[in-house]
Amino acid sequence: MKNVTETYVPINCNYYDKLEAWAVLRKNVSIKRYFPDGSDGIVEGRIVDFFIREGAEYLKMADGHEIRLDYLISVNGEELPNAC
Image 1 (tube, rainbow, N blue to C red):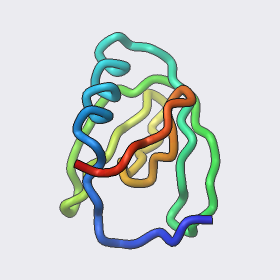
Image 2: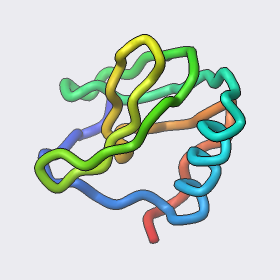
Image 3: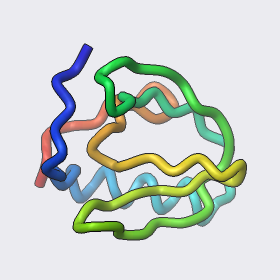
């Protein structure tokens, strides 16, 4: 279980580029992510958008899930590296 903070921590820039590529290619992805309570889980589907809310970056899935980028653990088995 992760100690999830309210302060956004930017993700690795190269990893962000991979997220954008999966979105542009309309690829289905399997995302392992943390939830605000520190637990984790998996969301599957397509990434359709990226946006900023209250200073934090998010991705939006086709099914409506919104995931804060620093809550990502891995996408398609590729773990999130350290921040930029």
